[in-house]
Length: 186
Image (tube, rainbow, N blue to C red; front, side, top):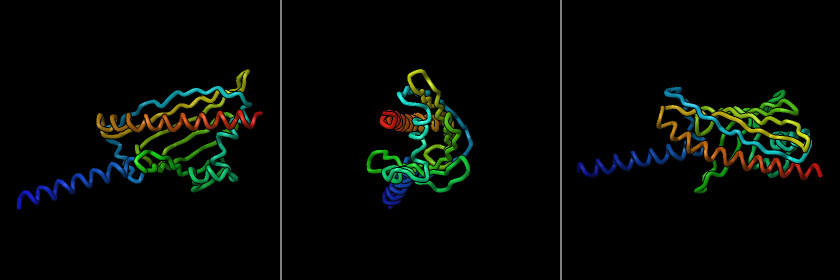
């Protein structure tokens, strides 16, 4: 009988752990304990784009525009729109058939800056910026950010995993912005 109780308890523990992991990865479980908070930089990532800054800015903000491409509507849902800011849900495939949903505020300072602040996601804190600088050959887009986790070293290890995936997603976005900006500039 004790073995059955032990196995039942172990099964429940494993099931709860798996559900917690899936919840964290997909952004459905968002924990902000503010205990043992550690932050780490994201970036900088720099992309030189052969297009004028206003075109790059338009390409970078296209997912948040009132009229946006249908493909963007599947990836970004605008939850609320205000003056110079939106609240947006971003959907990102994370493997294993799972899709992470992060909710962020996005602020706009045309044509030089776009700011992002995490409201709900796999970690309690992320703040990011896209800075657009005119160059002789077009525009330099610089991404910088900061990612924060709770629970000291354990959270830091989780943050390292999240940061790898987060950075890869940002790199794909920057490449999309580069390609679209250069296409529009032609």
